[in-house]
Amino acid sequence: MITEAQVRNIVNALEDPFLHKKLAETGGLEEVSIKEEKNHVSVKIAIAQTGTPEQLQLQMRIVNSLKEAGVETVGIRFKELSDEAMAKFRGADAVGKDESLLSPNSETTFLAIASGKGGVGKSTVSVNLAVSLARLGKKVGLVDADIYGFSVPDMMGITTRPVVRGEKIFPVDRFGVKVISMGFFVDDNAPVIWRGPMLGKMLNNFFSEVEWGDLDYLLLDLPPGTGDVALDVHTMLPHCKEVIVSTPHPTAAFVAARAGAMALQTDHEVVGVIENMAYFESKTTGEKEYIFGRGGGDKLADELRTEVLGRLPLQQPDWNEEDFAPSVYAEDHPLGTIYQEIAKKLDGKISSN
Image 1 (tube, rainbow, N blue to C red):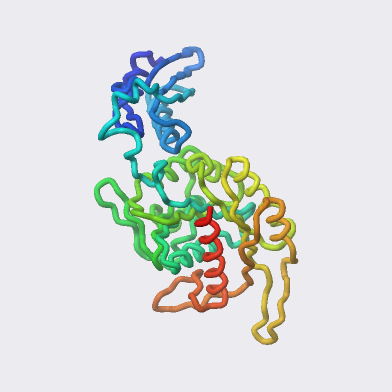
Image 2: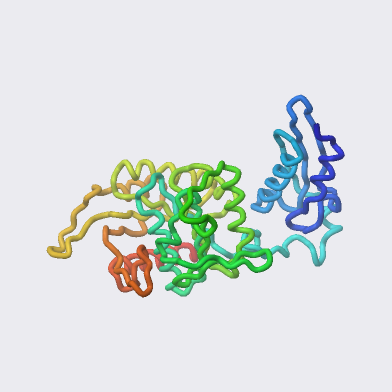
């Protein structure tokens, strides 16, 4: 069984994420409790700021470090360092100097694209919305957070992989969008067989170990539903905004409402609904056929107290063999024009907040 001294050595070697000093220096490890019969360790930690993504990262490091040492379960309570303790560290290394993507000082808008179920075109919407925002002159990144069902690299026609320099991963730039995906890190479309904690660690790496540079928007193509990855995003990014994608079919809209409800319950702002596959328009007659019914997007928007940002018909992109991207619509394509209108509406709505 692990001893208190061993616990203190392990935890004190970790850094306060804001002060960038070891917990041994800050006095951040305040209490240690060990229940030998359950192989359980509880610790009380004081850090510069609580309720932040950085706190979550530290929590994961503490849990992983103690479990590697043989502990079965770990309990952690966080509190903020006292004003007296903080006064010792004010200056060059004081809190507020962290300019990382996840820091409270970051000016990047996180925008999650979510759906209640698969097959509604969420990834297609994510890709084209990211490209459309880039066409507006915005600095845009895109995280393919659907770690089990990654598809963004293929949809965007990406054939290269990220470059690693030092300890940083540099994302692939395509159509003015910086892209990172699990698809870059597996070979030959191999399946990803991971449990929840491993997914969270990979997602955290996408935020903290990728050199994104200055971004106006970072879009996240979430897996459908309300599972582990979606929950991790809600925890890591407390100020994320969300767009919910659904078809007009009543059942799809009903299921999508769960994803929207999860966003509202975790204080994410649902900024709008996009109704995909809204209709099919005949090239011959111009007649519209509402294959999946009508009204689902409006009903979903009413339930989530938001608006329908746009309706996208069923149409195929024009493929260019020289610059192949099977799911990206050209700017002058009818759907490309609709995506551009949605991007303008979305940017205006977010900028005015």
